[in-house]
Image 1: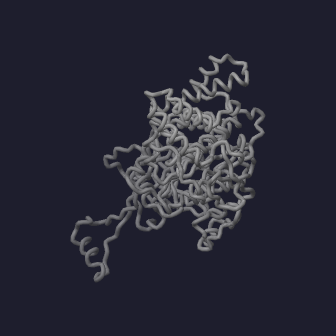
Image 2: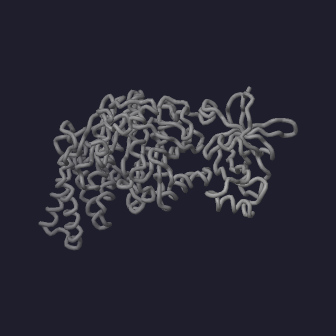
Length: 544
């Protein structure tokens, strides 16, 4: 039973609203201090002598109107215009608008859909923090922050439920809005609860997460959120060979050229159709030669056909970038292709540029990346010393496919859950190059579609969401939007998230640092504003 409460407002008659889920609520002056925008309330209404309860959120207001006179009356105007001189003011009350979120079973503290609305004079009551926590289903072991406006309500998600993290996450916001802090909080919580976390770090911000936070100015926030500075239990930092490491103990690594699908290389290197034809022809000829040498059990024609249709064979092919370039050199020296000579020259130049970075076929390698898949471990791939996005994208694609293949082969489910954080995701795949990166997007789609059951979570982070292709938003069932300015950036998030009250989006450009709009299918897509706790581990560049 709900304790006897004093109503803080009452549902008004409708005024021609076009939104069947929105109600106008009138608030007496004596309870105006008890209501605010963003507040969750219970609305109790009579239906033919039977009471029904509704769960709602104050979406707009409160607005203030005088009681006995018009706001345009001489009395009201004088009270406002001469407020510094006169002591009178007409009595006034408040008006706000509530968005119905469902019909409420008070005994079970659960909601369900409804096709009716509270009647006029329905009483509006505040909800306790405990009630809100149950209604929004904020239970879980991963502590993200607190519900905005409710200091006692913690926002938590479960680490062991498939409806949460494995559905993929998108974190968006402008510079300084707090999105990196939020991603770091997710990393800390996932690593704490037996996940293996891999961070693709463009700026080198996460390389010191094994150390406690040094932001002394956030001392009051640590106290407020009940956390303390603390580094993650296990962290390893890796960097591509021939790039400057951010830490002295960072491990250099390269990748095998034969690990990369030729179609992926075509996309990332931006080859024209003519260059693509030359490249694939050489690659297939070398693949057939490797096949003949190794005497594979498949027929030569069948093997080459499978290569034409998609990558097959993996490291066993043994093709190196140097082999491709030597083949081009031989063709040009022997003047074998007069009509396609220009294409070969440009192709060789592009391949040599990649070769100079030394990423392919170096002595240092992470093999199949299995060493990254350790529970409670954070592995940071540090790209801050690399200025070549093509190299970064080749490494990222190789890592994503390799991790996915490891999880596919893990029939006994011995490997831990995996979260892969992709910082500055718009530099990996963008809206402008999406049409030229279908193979790369297919990799992301496959991991998203099949990875959920295998507990692989992708976390995309971007300060330019309008630059991301629509496919990325479709992959993210959980969206965390920090302050986002600019119509295009906000529209990109808004248009990919259905069923959210439009008034909610009006607040996103005005959010303070650390506050975010949290939308997740785990929370039944009920949008909530969350004050994210400060990260406990160190973030480089911010704290130095």
